[in-house]
Each structure stands twice: as structure tokens, then as C-alpha cells.
Image (tube, rainbow, N blue to C red; front, side, top):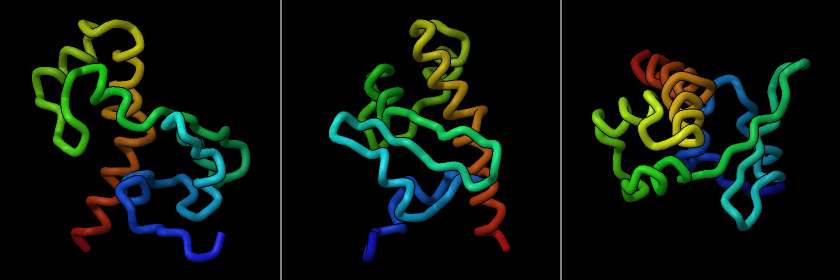
Length: 106
């Protein structure tokens, strides 16, 4: 894909996953995003953009408050929210954001 915009928020925090136009191949109208792995042996990651914000009742673009974040990680909002919160705050997305923050400090 020529001319793909690689500066959006999706590419700022996805760390070790491929940050190229290939990542857009799995993006469809339903909001699901599939990220192609950068390294051999990794499986692609598929997630729904903004789903945790909608489930917690927080407008997209605003940070999730700490109390709601902790409640989602405990499972107070249900098992799906717990999985999404673990993915966002402790999983691959969180690791990528931490790496991006370290790179910005250099």
C-alpha cells in the first residue's frame, strides 16, 4: 500500500509488531484490527479498536480512569472486559507503549 499513513495512534504503541502497511490488511469496517507479527513464530493479534472504552463507558480518545482500569482488571465489568483490560494494560499493547515511551526519552 503506497502512501499509507503510519503516524496514527495505532503505530505509536504496538512495539514489537510490524509497523507497516501490512497491518492495515486485516482492518475492516467492524473495528477489528489484525496485526501481522514481525518475528517468525508469532501469531497475528486481532483486537477490536475502542471496545474496552465502549464497555467501560469512557469516550474514545480520553484516558480510562484508574478506578475503572482496576475494576476491569479485577473482572467487575465481566470476563470479556477483564481479557481486554489485561491485553491493553498488561499484554502486548502495554509492552509496546512502554517501549515507545523509552524510545521517546532518548
